[in-house]
Length: 146
Image (cartoon, rainbow, N blue to C red):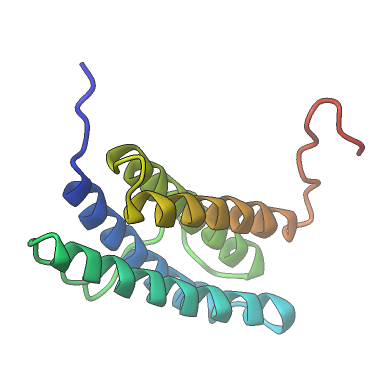
């Protein structure tokens, strides 16, 4: 049996994921330089903005936005450029999952759904970009050049 999230539960979960993304991009950014560092800092700002916007939506729904933890444990140690890029991709995967949950829990014409679809697209694109920057070739879709 599948348990479906309510819109408020999905919003709260998305705030929690965005809080982790903010922390994680700060952690990853410390190991990056040049173009990657610039991209990580831009993503950090975008995730802060998204976290704040989601928190406002949670509050408007009558719930209390969850507080951020003092620190978060990354899925793997971040010790070099490759592990920092991998963390960025993993953060975006988590954000895409939260955006998907919010999309599924939102009404078809709601503001939350429009935002969630936009965020889902951004997260998926960003994850693919971080994976591409690791030097491994991007997956090619069937029927596409490459």
